[in-house]
Each structure stands twice: as C-alpha cells, then as structure tokens.
Length: 252
Image: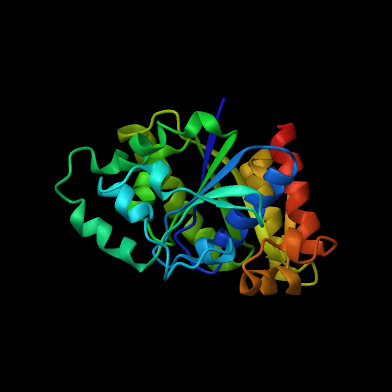
C-alpha cells in the first residue's frame, strides 16, 4: 500500500526541503518507488532534484487548478532515481485562484488518486506556512513528518503545528497522524540543542526518530549541483544519516 507523507513545518530554514529531497533519494536507493511532490512556490525541491524550475512547462500549479493531470506534470529524476512533480513561483497564485473551488483543500488528494498506487512512497514538501497549500498537503497525506532544529523557538512553533494537525484531523482528514519528529542540523556540542532534544524525547517519546541529521557541509552543497547528497558525496555524514532515516522508516 502507498504511504503518503507530508513533510512540513511552518518555520523556514529547518531542513524541510533538504529532508524531502534526500529522504526521497534514500528510499529510492533502498529499492522503493518514490514520488516527490514539490508544494512550495520557492521550488527548492525541484531545483535540488536537478530540474530547472524556470523552464519546466507543467507544474503542480497546473494540476491544482485542473489545467493538467498529475501524469502530465510528472518528470523522472534519473539522478535521484525518483519521480518529481515540480513547482515554481506560479504556485504562489494558486491560493487566491482556488478560493472559490469546490473541495479546495482536497485538490492534491484527488489529483494523486490516479497515480499513487504506482509508488510505495509519496513525499510532499510543504511550504513553510500554514496556508491552503499546506492544508492540501495535510489532507492528501496519511502521516506527517516534522523536521525541526533543536532550539527554543522551535518548541513554540511545534505546538502551533500540532494544533493545526489536530484541526485538520477533526475537519478534513480523520486518519492523519504524526509519523515522527526529525531533529535536523544537530550539533552535539551545543548545550541548548541537547536540552531541547531531551525535552522532545520526554514529551513525544517514540514519535521522535532515533536518527539525527547533523550539520554537514556536503548537505548544504548538494542542492547547488542539483543532486541529493547521496549522489554528491555518499560517504558524508549527511548522506549516511538520511540512509539511516530511510532504514528506520522502512523498519517501522
């Protein structure tokens, strides 16, 4: 059965897109059929997957508005061995244009129905905001992965996101659950990071992934080459951490 995972955090700069691209590549390297949906108008997951967001003709924007099918928007990514639904700046206008659409929060869910059985995993890279695009991601997903840095403000934002997920579960998607919290950009030398990590484990228990994503230069470099870090430097700590995360997800 296909597993649809929304990767979201309303706070920017927490490694959400980095996680989306590198988890997609790591799951694909484990032999799984993977589709990555870029639902962020910044299009960073598109560029990080080696697809030029400026020249791509059909994107998730056209799918949400009903101007194209998801099959028409899908592109293969031989570099990462997964498929991609790209995004670019056009997507920023989708929220306004979808305001009067029937079932506006379920546009992505309905679009995915025709192809989701072709994949073992569908990963949705949501924008860093609690908006209609993110709502579409949450309504389409079976579960949510929350990447977060271990810092003070991250804990405050986490409570808002958990409340949003509860509201989505109550009103739109009763089976939605939190798959896990992923600690990213982790520096074990930072005492505050250790303290926040301990607090997360105390409050969320086994909802916190055992795998921790470290701060890593190769992870930061890889998007500039349009590659997941696994194919930029497969021996780096960042690449190995995402392979470990994929193994943890597959063994759950």
